[in-house]
Each structure stands twice: as structure tokens, then as C-alpha cells.
Image 1 (tube, rainbow, N blue to C red):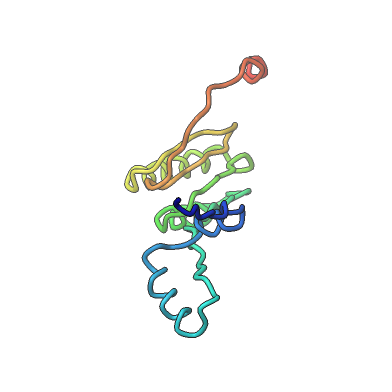
Image 2 (cartoon, rainbow, N blue to C red):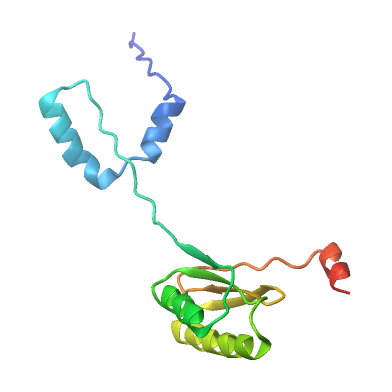
Length: 139
């Protein structure tokens, strides 16, 4: 008669450790660990990509718009609040930022009155449809 071998079901920590382990570095790390002590297991964390969002609460001058444009060029998402900007300057800033956004092939969304979301090309923006309550508030 064959002898049955029981294997333990992996626990929550073991499953999480499997998700957070890089497989290409495991072999190298396991070799280092097994040479020092056999009871240690390899465990490394995956590094997450860092994404920067810059909120510009008060843009009142063209220098503030230049800072936002430079941030967009470096890959940072920009949220621009132009509510306190003079109307003539606001239009110049909007035109300038539209040009920068076009050159960067980014996404431009107006999320409120004189509040804009400008996103680089590597980010995806999903715009949810307006709820009936939101459309009623606009009317």
C-alpha cells in the first residue's frame, strides 16, 4: 500500500509573501541565505512605482503656470485651481497649459469651475458620467 504524504495548506502570510516576492531575484537571494543558514527563506518586497500629484491651489501669475508646466513635463499630474486668477490672466494660463498638455500628449479635464486636471500621457483618466443630482445642481 502506498503511503500518503500530507502537505500543509499555505497560510495567509505564506500566500502574501509569494505575492510580494520577486522571482528573478529569488534564486540569487535563496543561494545567499541557504549558504548561511538553511532555515531562512527568501523574502523580498516588490518596489511600487511612485506617482506624484501636484495640487496648485492658487495660480495667480504666469510663473505659477510655468511651475505647473515644468511639473507636467517631468511626469507629474497637476490639479490647477484658477478661481482666484484674473479673467484675462486665467485665459492666458489656460491657453498656455493647453499647449503644454498637447505637446506632452496628456489629458485635460475640467473638474470644476476654473479647476483643471492635467495629466501626462502615461496616466489613464476615467471620467465617470454625471449623476442626476450633479446635473440638477448645475441647472
